[in-house]
Image 1 (cartoon, rainbow, N blue to C red):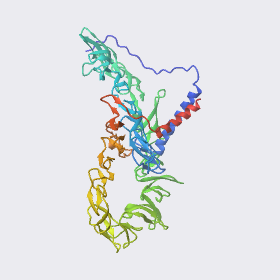
Image 2: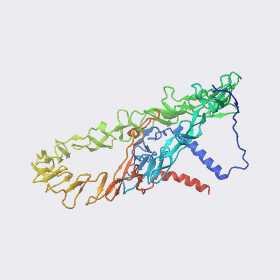
Image 3: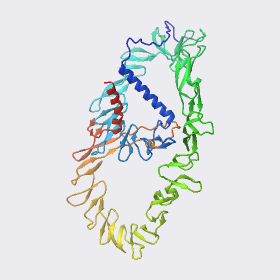
Length: 609
């Protein structure tokens, strides 16, 4: 039990330093720009509505549309414009590829397969283009060995946690500084920190001393008060920063934590969410003791007096986000936001429209993969999917009467409606006139496809006379025979290869195929490997789209990425954590997205010149 020797209560005040001179003009300008940009971002998130914590979506003026990948930032669904952090943007394919583990930004050389890190996540340090996980280490040598640890850790080749209660230590047996709530205990060859709160109902003592084998509490932690009757530090009510024992005074709370205000009778602290449900962000006025809501949660709008958040969807208006009960900024899924002279409304998207141009839901533009056609029964333009409406069609178009026709059919079909060709015909002009046959068949004098009757044959001119074999087989006397291991084509001589399979190279001496060395991607004719592979593994659940109304998903951490670099024709690990060797390539093109983000900063710096 604690004995009270000295307990000091002190009220907490917010102090403002008096400014002796006006703010520098440049600093004021910078702050103004920052405020304007933050307000603009906030307005876009609330009003235009498609900026979600997972992105992967964009706003087309009437609805949220998925990008090509969840890791995209895009303005159209066919491709990515830029990528989220930890992804590399491929401008050629307009796709996002995961960076190696630990990278915020990465780039890729056209001559190498390696993705090279240009910026690392917290908890990682960069060594030769690789982000190395530092755990509790704050300083690492060029060989990947720790030289300095975080607070509450000590160094013995690696970083190890100090014992409980130590804020600094030299080893697990020697504490040099104790945390709040602990006192130092010296015992023979060890120095440890013992708790000031040994009992289950004791948790708020900040500092204490041991006097005649009895713990004496000298001060309580913030948000605790000293109960003299029981010699204990007890917890203040929720939200209180400083408070008084309720049995001594009618007033309980003196000051409140940030985000809380004293109640009218000064007896407790209340927060914004208690007073204004569904408020996302509040401002507090200590003088008037008032809460004012700045932003409401998604699905709610802020009333004009800023004192309440009301739901957007009243059960029939189909609003998802709004500025008021009559002004939506986004509709629920399946509805499109439309504006006319009467204002905004949510229109059911019945016909797979990208955008609509009237209250009846007539399509103006179609979603990707759909074509705009005129429906005579509805007397309006709607969108139709090619594959669903014309079977065996690859791509569609519309004719002069705005009806759907096929532009390209799959093999074996022809015409605007993809009618089937004769059996085993690959390309035809009509049901009877075949132009080319499927693999393993030839065209006879009657324009019909007949079997070559040669195993593993792709093409032939007549029965049992093959002219081209499948991969891994060679053409010998009009028949197809298996090649040697690793060989893709050995026409004319089964013992000599003409073309090797992937991961094999053709030897100059005997025209045979030998497998690449491990982790190799390309060699010269002598088998010298000059291009090595990169292995990047990551949590594939990150490549799934999540609706922004769902809870934020949790992802597994990426597994270790592995790079290989050519050294004397062999592929060696460029980042070998065991040996401390980090000989990775560091040359690649500048990350375009990262460079584009530097431009506003450069402009601001120019303003300040």
